[in-house]
Image (cartoon, rainbow, N blue to C red; front, side, top):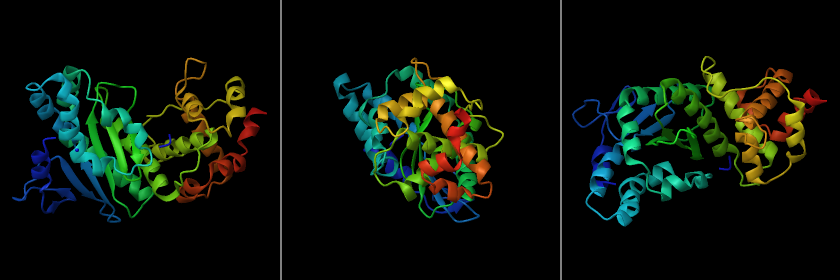
Length: 313
């Protein structure tokens, strides 16, 4: 990973005043299923915002019925993307990951609207809140983190980090509270790492593996009873032989092929699993290392200090 709507509606809903248990309330003091919810960690006062972007989609679909199809993309951008852009995407280090979300109107309206019907505001909001507070207790930061929830009928990608403090949740029909919790924790680690350590240098394959491996380790530390990212604990010499010569390669297409797996012979999410085992090997050798310490540790040091190559000798 390398990582404006109905504008009047957005403005009205964001005109929230007061707080109740760290969440936004309307001017009458009653909790409301608003577009934006503010959250504060009571333990360390770290602040978050949850933006329920899916609430803008049905109004967009209704409005699009009265205009030519060739104008739908402009309406999508003006009614959904533009109002949310600053908080969800602006200046994101990995903005390229949001290319289709930003510049393509959502396909298959019926399927997307079915997903929207499935989204329970309270359950979704509580799961995200739980993940943010749990994660920030493990790895605090002074910056605010925003989580933006978009609907999708594509179940191949769950979430991504557009940049430091900007987590995008792609809610699909298979979502559950556990998926949300573990997934947000995973992306939270990417967010904090990007805030503190991103320097725009070229990522090698090894950098990518450890980047994702750290997030998987953090995800499983935050939620040890949720098995979102599958890990193969075995050491397959045949698979390793296909990537060991590529560790210093800066080709991001190659890195993504290894991370996600492919028909070329890599198992699904091979690189995530391998990266996790690299971090685990480092922690086995350095059991007193704190989350902050191994988060900032360069990928080469994680690999070398964990003697990872020895698993394949």
